[in-house]
Length: 56
Image 1 (tube, one colour):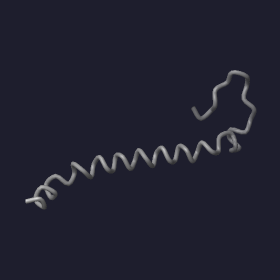
Image 2: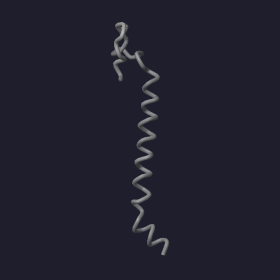
Image 3: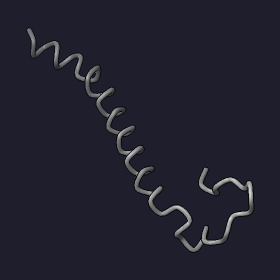
Image 4: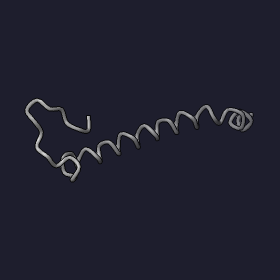
């Protein structure tokens, strides 16, 4: 009985789990990239007073 329910409704638990995993990996990569703000050649210039950061 339980195995039949798991067999039929596996996507109910797998789908939110993959969504949560994707959200976690996305936030983790954002935090990883934020360590390199203004350190790359592309963003190395000085910002003007009142200018927003280029990555936002």
